[in-house]
Amino acid sequence: MAALPRNERLLNWLKSADNSTLQEVGVSASYLRLIAYGHKRPSAKAAALIERATQGYVSRQSLRQDDWKLIWPELA
Image (cartoon, rainbow, N blue to C red; front, side, top):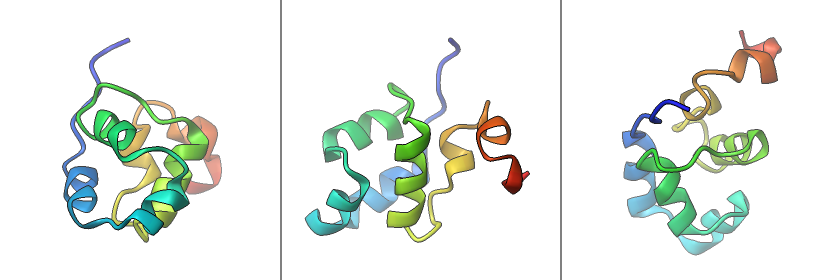
């Protein structure tokens, strides 16, 4: 698997996200940082929840650049 890109939008959002908003995503802040720095790839479910929690600021397409069209063809 190729290296995942760093997601600056997710990093910026994490700086101001409160605990209740982070709980909406269902994963820990430390795991979200791993995703943001490109060390982990979110599941399709987590990507959609991140998009919802960030009110679209971080898109699921930016989190799963290589396969989002297969997972969510209605967004293509």
